[in-house]
Length: 140
Image 1: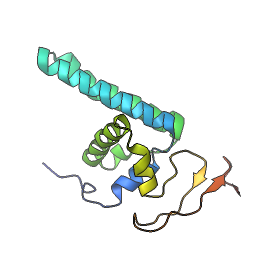
Image 2 (image 1 turned 30 degrees about the vertical axis):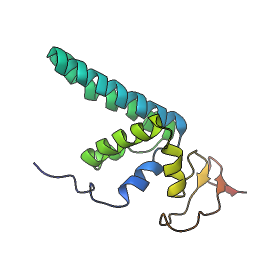
Image 3 (image 1 turned 180 degrees about the horizontal axis):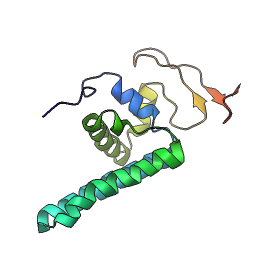
Image 4 (image 1 turned 90 degrees about the vertical axis):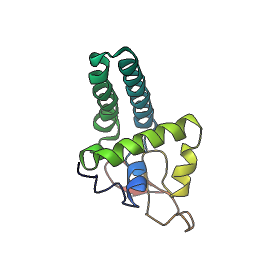
């Protein structure tokens, strides 16, 4: 089995966070991840192949709606499926424990759309935030 080339990329997690800045997209991802986990559990417990097949369809279906309709970006799953799955689970865990906003602050990524960021290492001071209009023009 081939390994995911981006699973050891140190920039994968910050890039993942950047692609999930909209709270609605993150909520859809968490809902999809939890629904998929529940379907997986039910499918294994009852030996129901329908629930096992539905698990990834529901999980990714809900999450991809967030990308295509809300965030309007390309899902990381298409580039790095295993790393993306691990990041989905990590994001759900952080969201459920109230620690997700801390991750966004750690990397200097605004956890809401409409703000531009400049990538920096986690140890560097946070950059100033700048508003960007939907047409791409910058404002203060």
